[in-house]
Image 1 (tube, one colour):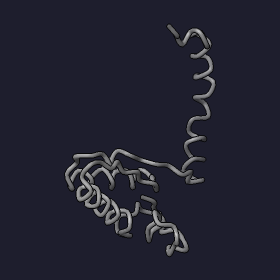
Image 2 (image 1 turned 180 degrees about the vertical axis):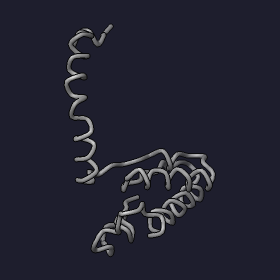
Image 3 (image 1 turned 60 degrees about the vertical axis):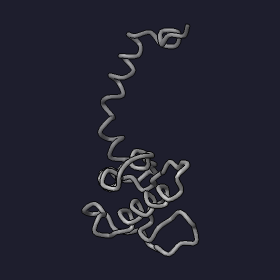
Image 4 (image 1 turned 45 degrees about the vertical axis):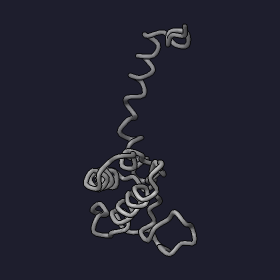
Length: 120
C-alpha cells in the first residue's frame, strides 16, 4: 500500500510548506490579477432545485469563477431548466461582483459563452 512517506517524509513536507507559506498571499493576488480561468461544478449538480442552483451559481460568480459546468442526466427537461437558471444568473450584469466589468466583445460565436463572457 502506498503512503505519502514513500515520496516525502513528514518533516520534509512541513519544511516545504512552511517555506512556501511566505509567498501564499503574493500567489493569491497574482491569481486574482491574472483572472486565471476557473471552472466550478457545485451549482450544476443533478436534483438541485432552482433556488439552490441560483444560490450556488451566485456564490461561485462572486468567488470569481467564470466557467460553470453542469451535470446532465436522464431528464432533459430538468437539464434544460438548470441551464436556463444558471445562464440567467451569469448573464445578468447586476450579478457581477463589484469592480468587475463584462468582458469586451460579449457577442461570441462560441456556443457556451454568454453575453457577459461567462461560460456554461
